[in-house]
Image (cartoon, rainbow, N blue to C red; front, side, top):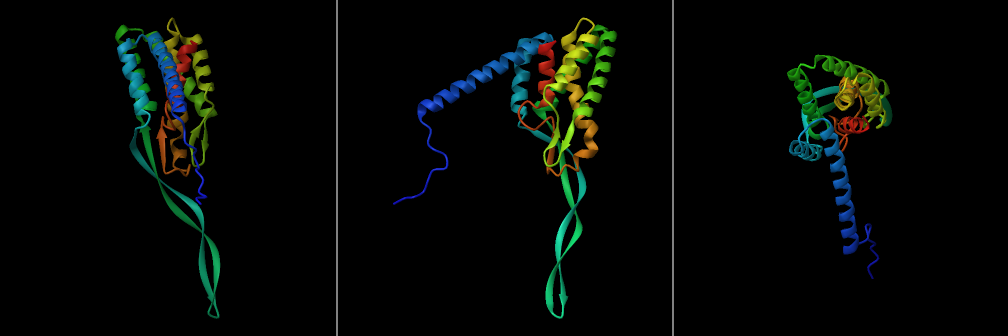
Length: 234
């Protein structure tokens, strides 16, 4: 008699079909939201869809850019002999750890490319007043993100998901100067990237994680979402 039990029960074909349909509906809903946000930024639909796919696939790609070394206290056990009898003696020591810092393609590089495009377009159109307001909004959003971001041991930099978009929305309403979606996206994106990740660079190596990804931690990290949510709210 076989007493082995299945840890994961078999899934019937109808259940798999339902799961696939739900996944497809969620994907279509999210892609439509992303396209609507990009449309408010004035990005053509073909380019917006390509950026969406790059962000989706690029969220699984991390490019190493630096390596940091940290030292952590550890407890080791030595041995001391007394009259030929060994005794274990614990003692403190320092252990070297290597931390690889990477940048996520979908969560950082794609939003950064959009920001650079929008800023260069402002320069090309001669809208220097809006450019100044946008950079001011980025500085304020970065300071705000840095204040609410918390380094979590073994994980990375954590922060509330909806606070940066709300701050970007407020800044867009105050400094939008006729184009609130632009200010919302740039400040929401760069605020998180600069304030949460780059301004905590020195703390990253002490988090105890073997690799920390800027803009990573899953598909469409806070950097990508902060900009999109802020644009939709603006």
